[in-house]
Image: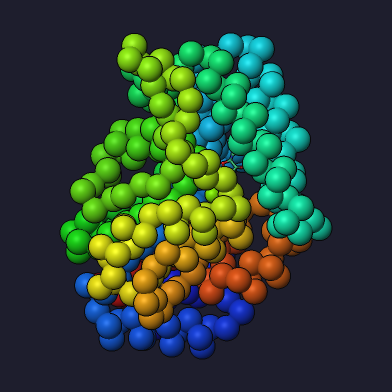
Length: 286
Ligand code: C5P
Ligand code: MG
């Protein structure tokens, strides 16, 4: 049906079910579809030429805006908490408070740095952030077909927006839920706004934004893109959902995590740095 679903990176527990969801969505029409996507390591690359690519947080962590001392502290947090994030041996209930600790500590350090809003664009420009191959087609195609794209990120909204702005794809159909920086009147970071979004509370984040989902109630067919099991709850705010097709990028600790990804995502993309499969699905749906 979609030749790209035979790519070597594609794994599916129930290909028949995927076909059924796709057929049902095609039948409903592209004007009933919305896309909900995670950002870090889903729309952006996990690695390039064997080297890890940065998350929104890492873009700042590695920038000139942070003192060497704080860089070391942030690196230590990453080395401590990232292995916990991807540890399959620990249940989510055990990881959740530790993830809150990570985000909270990192945000405290960032706030101490008196980061200036007007320097964020340069930090992004000088970073090694990379959107996945095929991003242009994804963003442009959704825009052309007026399909709403919600980017739902536990990263940093200001940074994420800058990445897609600099890539020329921050189109009018894109909406972002994320952690936004709060600047004082002189443009210096003083806090983060609103409720913290971390990797395991996207459900709560979705439910806080009922207005958005209310506006999109004529689009009960969802294409969800994520890279973490926490991303599976991003669509929990969608009203009267009819179909959901979940595509998950499995970037790291592949063997240990493959079964749990196959159990929860309809299509699993193993170490696939491209958006080829999501793009093929979207072309099929439109
Ligand atoms: O956009 P997304 O929801 O993927 O953003 C969360 C990612 O940010 C996590 O996968 C986590 O590894 C990363 N992170 C980070 N530094 C922090 C907190 C989270 O790189 N201080
Ligand atoms: Mg992610």
